[in-house]
Each structure stands twice: as structure tokens, then as C-alpha cells.
Image: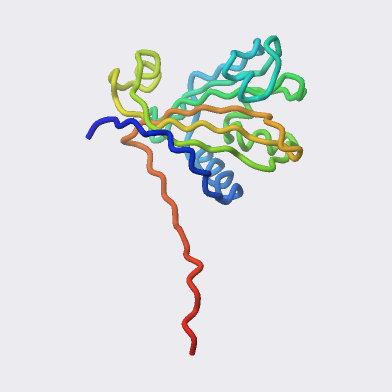
Length: 180
């Protein structure tokens, strides 16, 4: 039990199937609903500007919402896309989609997603949004989506209750056949 610090070993990430990630996002969105949705246009924070390779005073469209499954608040997501993309976001977009699938529906083709999963503890804001105690364990997921030119076009950070999140992966081996 507890939280452990890694040594941030710079090991290259393994490759995964992006289509499966998008399929899972669609499945979750259709099984759940959103609450506390906010959509704004604002200046990019330093972190967002860095992740999206934007200038300091660049405007972004931000969205945030709580994900609700079986009447339980299971996660909170924040997203930012450059306003220069010209994409208009509405509450209707989020009814059956996540930002990942909204971009796809609006004609943005992704070439890849830099996906980082870690752990953190709920601060007062996240605890209030998710209806949990301060210090409760959370799974933290950060994603930066890349367009066909490999340019960052979306940054998302999601926090899921650790008691409501599982990361299931099936790995295969390229084992060589035994000679007959």
C-alpha cells in the first residue's frame, strides 16, 4: 500500500494500438455520462503551451467534465486544443463522446497519442469533484494527440478513482516455431 516514487528511467515507451484506445474511449462514453461540463476559450497555461508546442499568448479551447458511471463519479478530465483549429465544441458533443472521439468526429485524423499513466493523490479540488476524501488514490492519465504531420493538437489529463479503474492489456509473444 502507498505511493512510490520512480527513478524516471528514460526507457522508450512501448507501442500500442491507437484504434483500440479510441474504441475503449467510445465504449466508456456510451456507457456513462458527463457532469459539470465546462467549455471555455482562454490563454494556454505554460504547461499546455509546452505540450502543444504553442506560443505563450496562444488561445486554446478547454473543456473539463466529470465522468459518471452507474450514478458514481469515477473520473475527471481536462482537455485543451488550439483555438486555431477552428473547432467548435458544444455540450451535445460530450453526450456520447470523449475529446478523443470528438476530434475524430470533427475530421481530425490522428497519427499517434503519447499516453502516460501514473498515480497521484486527490487534492481538495479533485476530491470535491469526485466525491472522495482528500488523499484518496487516483490514476492519472496524460495524453498528447498528434495530427498527421505529428504536430500536437490536443492535450488531455484525466484522473480516475483508483477503486474504479483497471488497465487491462493482453501481450503477445513473437515466439519462434519449433522445428518439426
